[in-house]
Length: 278
Image (tube, rainbow, N blue to C red; front, top):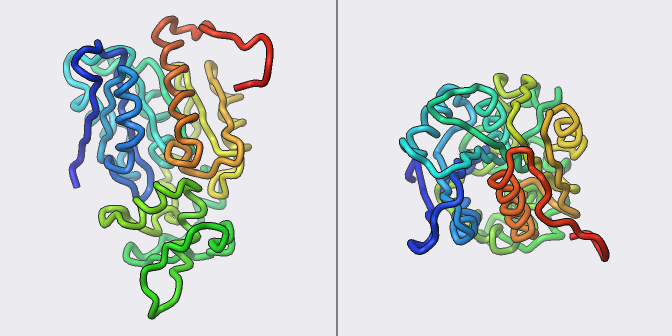
């Protein structure tokens, strides 16, 4: 699997900015093909990096700068999911004139509470969670078992139920040989558990029903950061960029990027004055 995948706007469209995407535990760049293509269609260059959760901010920054190139379309924004979201925060806080990061998107952050630091790391070849009962009932989702001789893979069903309610993405992950099952239960690296507060504007997206990271963590992060926008996806699970509401999540990212591009102070472009909220 490649360490870098890129999606660019159609030739007739001038790039409106650059997104550097950091995947989470068990993931790889191709997991974000749908998101990358959608943002590219709206004019943004998207580079999905093959970073690992253990990579520190210096290593991530070096890879991000290499992917962005010498003259990236601005604004340059780091966006991450799960541990990638924490890496995006830490990397944005490590100011570097070689890569002027102007914004950060925290999408379904990995947990940073005490319950994570003490968890036992699963065997990389193991498909089951240490405690599948902590995840939603897999029977409420589609049956992804393909081995009728051994019965359903409840560990994998539980992981899918925690990650996404999107049937298309569930099928894609199930058929993805490069995706590493069970890593969602692995401990978050210690260097990502420390609190950082980048000065750059931040968009925080989190699933209201995320069984991996409580929404309260996202709310607390938004309260701590100096320039944060918080979006909570109703009924959303952990992988907010690839959940059932992936179109809405991508649309919110585009709206936020357009505000950032027009004004680093994020002045509103449109206000709903009457009717239901979007």
